[in-house]
Image 1 (cartoon, rainbow, N blue to C red):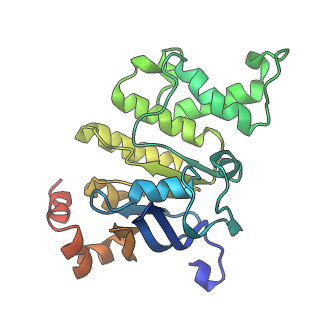
Image 2 (cartoon, rainbow, N blue to C red; image 1 turned 45 degrees about the horizontal axis):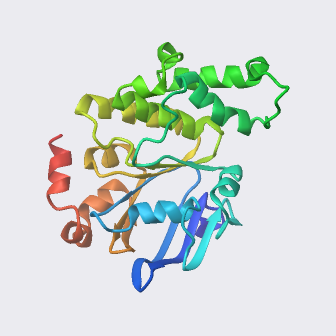
Length: 260
């Protein structure tokens, strides 16, 4: 199922370019992420993966090309406008409110999505729908028992889980996760993968990840980015067998994934 077959892609990049001064970083990326799929972007350090995420989420302006979200052109929109259209992302570096409780961190994202705006006369605690949705997300990310703890005292893995909770709090249909298992032990990684499966059920997921065991276990399709260009897109078995991908990037990474 693809946009080419008459089905609108959840996310589509068309001839996307990004230069910093005279230096090209993203060089004509064409990419389609199908609705409801888990799509991974892999590639060596410096390939442009984080830059690509920053372009999609509106943190960087593209030099040329087009970005479409559910068929709508979002090229050049600011991050908040893109988020309101149904796209949310996490970051490589954990991005939480350390002094606020776990519950308050998630509720911040929930309140806006439910239409609550700042009003000094309104008591947030009375927003029952926001409280119920926040509690549901805490259950999803296995942090219900830590709801009152300051986010800054959580373990690293718990903080990453909390950030995923904040990312999905707004109810976005398209989720971007930037290296969600970086720095985790094997057991923590397995728990993170299970969490990602749960929260992305029925949604569209685009993930950047260096752990090949995670990529091949989680992704429906994989795109390989090398020097700012997508050199291959396909199912995990097709990517494993692709000679160009093996030469440009995978090599021993596939063997490590096979023996993980």
